[in-house]
Length: 467
Ligand SMILES: Cc1cc2nc3c(=O)[nH]c(=O)nc-3n(C[C@H](O)[C@H](O)[C@H](O)COP(=O)(O)OP(=O)(O)OC[C@H]3O[C@@H](n4cnc5c(N)ncnc54)[C@H](O)[C@@H]3O)c2cc1C
Image (tube, rainbow, N blue to C red; front, side, top):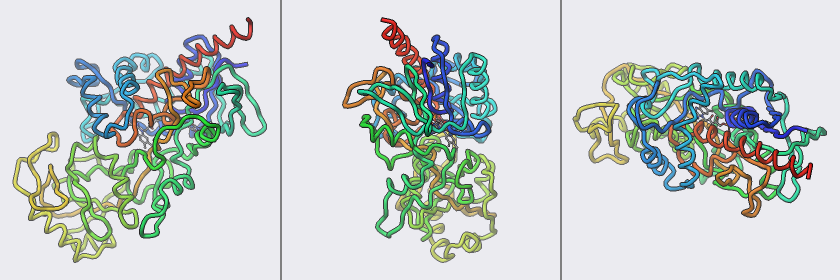
């Protein structure tokens, strides 16, 4: 019998498997995906958010525990568990040495990335290189890895883990870590969570999934039905506005369109609907998917002029380009009249200031609703560009409630040998909102905690068996 079975094959699962193995446990890792698609959403990532008190190899200045905490508090609007959040923050200051030991390399951000040189450490080769390094290290350390292994049920006895089931197959272990992601790839569940809007639309039907198709939420649903304590709202997720031409799954990072704060965002009636310059893009990009989801037809249009070009990472699909605004509207399938009127009104409201995209500058609008509070430059210099955007779901926040040991709870009681990490519990820290890189900080911190606790639990089970 294995000491620890880890369910999932992304960052949280790998951190758990490596840590459990380092602590002497025999480990089996079950990944639903085939080898070529291993790594879940983690394969699409680029960085993690790190607290640090002084400059480090790839991080400039400092980013204190308090500042990280305040950033998290602001984006979640207080929907976070402070002790657990602070554990994640502190762990982020030390985890990189451990990550390097397992083959992960870091690099400074490329120019044109989000404003993150101070707060986020980038993985050399991205998340794909990170998961490959972890798989290599896990294999070397003797972790047994099985692909094509979607676990569909768990055998429990009074809140304690007994075995996993994959179809007819039953695998016992002394302890288990659940790290099988959220339910973001399950379109039927998304449809139900978002429901029908006042116009009779089912908004989720127009969502695209930025990451893996394998996070169907099968185990999350199973655990909910089994009475595990749950946290979070099913309609809350990390949801980005992405290029409407992106594929349904696995479009990844390159379909994100990062010019929203440099121009205006319109709905299909050519109305603006939110302050595009509210805050720095890394602190705001994850609210735009939801904002677009609330617009008619779940579509938005990011409009910029040539002054914005070169100030953001070019997305994979080129923007629609035109020499005048009416032509741009036509090419985007919008009515030129209202479109030109909205941009003209915005241009008139722009106050002159000193444009600086690296600070919250003084370029803002006056007398316009909604206001654009920073980086408001008139859209007046052809060629003009437009990008049609759809909500792109990154990951859902509904998850299982944990304590500081990452234990799954039933009726407020922690399980002795069942633990959870990553997206399946991120909702404890992230009730809503997002700040770039915190998903990997949560998965790395709680993956390692869950792995360690599972190894300890297995030792306890062994002494129990031999007593
Ligand atoms: C495009 C994109 C970019 C992102 N960029 C960043 C970034 O730069 N920084 C950051 O912090 N976060 C980023 N995120 C979010 C980040 O990916 C997640 O927070 C993090 O990867 C979650 O890790 P995880 O291990 O919990 O889930 P995942 O990495 O998704 O792993 C879940 C695993 O479980 C497996 N699985 C699912 N169901 C089963 C089952 N029933 N049985 C067995 N296995 C199962 C899946 O195949 C998968 O391997 C990004 C996400 C996307 C989609």
